[in-house]
Amino acid sequence: MAPTYLSPGVYVEEVDGGSKPIALAGTAVAAFVGFARKGPANTPTLVTNWTQYVDNFGDFMEGSYLAHSVYGYFNNGGGRAYIIRLGAAEGADEGGTAQAALPSRAPTPADTLRIETIAPAEEAGDVTVEVSDATPPEEGEAPDDVFKVTVRGGGVEEVFDNLTLRRGRNARNVEQVVNDPETGSNLIRITDLGAGGSMAERRPNLGTFNLAGPQAVTTEIAVAPSDFEGSAADRTGMGGLEAADDVTMVIAPDLMSAYQAGMIDLTGVQAVQTAMIGHCERMGNRVAILDAPPDMKPQEIENWRVNIANYDSSYAALYYPWIRIFDPVTGKPINMPPSGHIAGIWSRNDDTRGVHKAPANEVVGGAIDVEFQITKGEQDGLNPVGINCIRAFPGRGIRVWGARTLSSDPAWRYINVRRLFNMVEASIDTGTQWVVFEPNDFALWQRLKRDVTSFLTIIWRTGALFGATPADAFYVKCDEETNPPEQRDLGMVVTEIGIAPVKPAEFVIFRISQYAPGAE
Image (cartoon, rainbow, N blue to C red; front, top):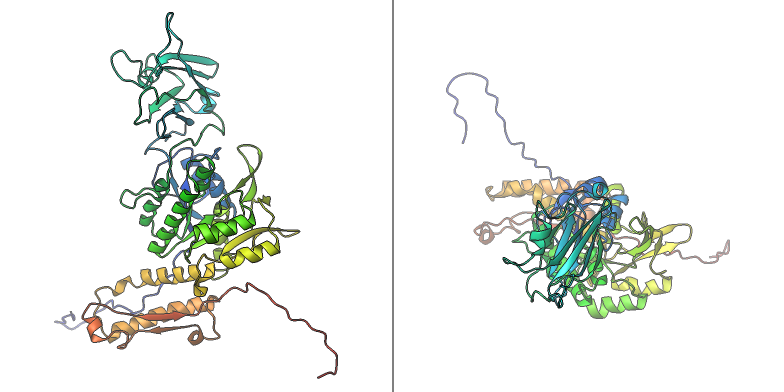
């Protein structure tokens, strides 16, 4: 509404300048899904450095690649990451105490006892828990469902005999006995996680379990492909990432630890990776970094990729082989999936060169070797099917030597092209929210065209688009042709944008011939 002027004077008014600059969307935010020593479960938690990860989720642990992957991510240039911890109930082990999941005799691994220390290991000393047969009575044998728990730590030994999972007046229930504040243990607490099966079947396996030091946690927990996939409604697993709009990379390193532990087979691996790809396609602003299964020779991974997994998407990239690092847990070199390190390289590449630069010919920081030495002849078969190789070059270190997506469409063959479009689309989407409910007329079309053109000109100047001039690199069309009356009646305004991305020089060819001076 126009202002009303009723008396003489000077009037100062603020007006809309018209220009709405479009800011560049972030491209380097990773999301990791896996097993951790402690921390919130199934909740995307943001960390920005390794110290924050340790404070929230604990240090390295045996049987899990998550911590190693996150460390590799930050070590290679990563800056922001969301962590989703699998395999524990909300609030479990929040105090940073060591814990172990003791498998039962039941057919399903979900029937377990969780045993955790009350005090930090450095205060209680090395804590071990021995589960053994109950002491039989003077005449007869002990019932099948009873057992004995012996706890040792800090020079103290605690013995709790004739325990059972039964509850009742005459039953020595393991939780009630061990957790009793007056007569129970001063070193541990026990939680019954089991469900189903008879009590005899659910008696824990016999053995000794260490709860202290860097190997304090075991990952003998029940996981299935559905645990990785999760639910958007329940905010679990990858589904929980739908609420994190700024994620651009999705990584699940512990999919491979679950496979190695026998909890998931290759079909399950394929199911989870397919879910990762589907998630990225739905969100439209992120790419899945997939690990190849372990111990596969070059011919085997090619067959698995082409004839078994058979992925076809520009929203995913597959890397092979695994890399070898020094493991702080065992003090020895181990092989591990490279996805976390690759995510760090993508971030480093974005910071130093830009998202339009292919994230390849880059050194893998922290890698001391590769699981398999790939030859040029072997890569000749792997590269065309979208398997990005990691190779060791004499005098040049361990390098990423591929930059392809898993798409069969030549237009979306390269990772940098997919990620450039993701960034442009996300930037325009965020930067043009002001358009909603504006009058759909010629003035709006001109403002949209001007703002998007200004944004793409900036992108062109960074070298991300191919063309000697902006007119060669992109076009923006928003007029009566893209917005006819019948479309405007539906409340729609359409802007057509075309951009020419720069493709990587994947094959560098020098043509050399003999030259005779003076010859034509």
